[in-house]
Image (cartoon, rainbow, N blue to C red):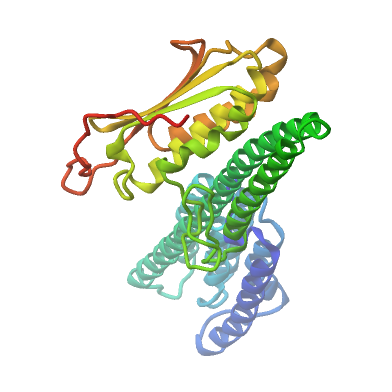
Length: 417
């Protein structure tokens, strides 16, 4: 709704009170200093005060307010009362009209009212025999136009300020929502993968507890390691929420908790094989084909590495949860000119109908991450069965060139048995 600054009653009351005081004392003074003018009586004061009263009481009916104010000032002057501040009451009504209600309607009514007002003033001057100067009337009309132009400028300035504040508030809400979404994705990726691994290791431990104590102990140790790493990553995410600069973090090559680090979890592509431990504990063969040129620190921008890491992590987690028939999984990470291609392909087939809701949030999170980095994500049939394929653009520097990467080695395969 289009509202003006005088739609609130307090500033309108202040303006009306100020005008009433000025008009009252100004009219009494003008009557004293203008010989031949009619002495101000109760009728004269009543007509002079119509403008301030209308300004206060009729903000929602601008046309009626202008008509009453113009009629009162025209009658006041036609009856021979003194010239002077009485005109200010009507000008105040016109300013009130400009600063209330919809802006377009306010401009039309206010400027039309100004023309009507000065038509009435000229008519009243023609009925008087005090030799009113035309120059003085034209000067008064000019000052009325100036007052209306100033009021218009004030309203436009206030409208721009309000629009700027609204835009800033909207940007802040968007930033908060974006940060919440990012934190939700981080927590989902960390907890889904880690809890899935813990569940698998706990099952192995329970199954072997009576038959193979050493294997059960190994499963418990793995649970301990996985839970510790998960806690580290959760602390990193929560450190961002708390605004701690040293919330450093991820399991994929982050600095230790007692060293300064970035405010977001960090990873490196060399840590990808660690993500396969839960699947391997179930007997699934997971192989990694990662271009060695991408492994050195700094070879790929950190945010691109983070997206690739999370895509692999979520894909392996989904393979473990929703592809129980899978026996082999192949992870490929390669550079294709200015693109980083990440593919996770398993032979377990697509998730069943009952898995659609469970997988939805993780796939949606992956898609948001990849598209947020300017890439694309495809999910569907692959070479072996079901595949997740992400394409992430590698950013260019200010000169437009691709970031320099080490030359591709002859052996682009890294097999982690």
